[in-house]
Amino acid sequence: MLALLDDPNVADTEILYRRASWEKIGGRGKTEPGQIAKIHHNFFSDYPKEAAERLGYSGPCMSVGLHSVIEQSGHRPEKMLENFPEFGLLMITVGELRRLKRASGEPCPQGILASATLAEPWHGVVFDLESPPRRDPAKKAIAMAADWLVPLIG
Image (cartoon, rainbow, N blue to C red; front, side, top):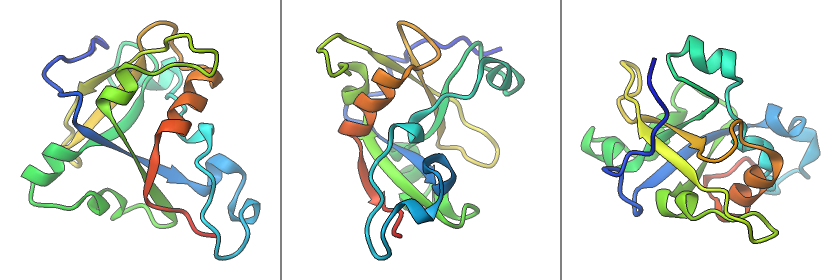
């Protein structure tokens, strides 16, 4: 079981990528044809504790891809979408997550752990350092800080 401890070896400047699906926002019909979907806080939900434990993690977390490892593998970030049709790709830096604040201004720092898999050597997980699982205020703060690399388009 991997303990969820923030890895200081992952630099604040590291870009993280997160897959985003229409399912998380109620389907394609929620976005006007030709328009880019809003970055919704539901894109940043954790695996439930039980699912995370089945995957070998000690608590709730969400999967991400680490840019530096994708690049070292000779790929572009879009490689993360290869087996995920109809998905978009979001990006945010580790530093933004570590310094994350709710709309109220209260800190809600997130941690990062590189956790390579056979299928995705660039895989990592992000987790709430203060009150796992990540709650809506923290998810909304991440949504405000994130940007599309490959947007979902209605």
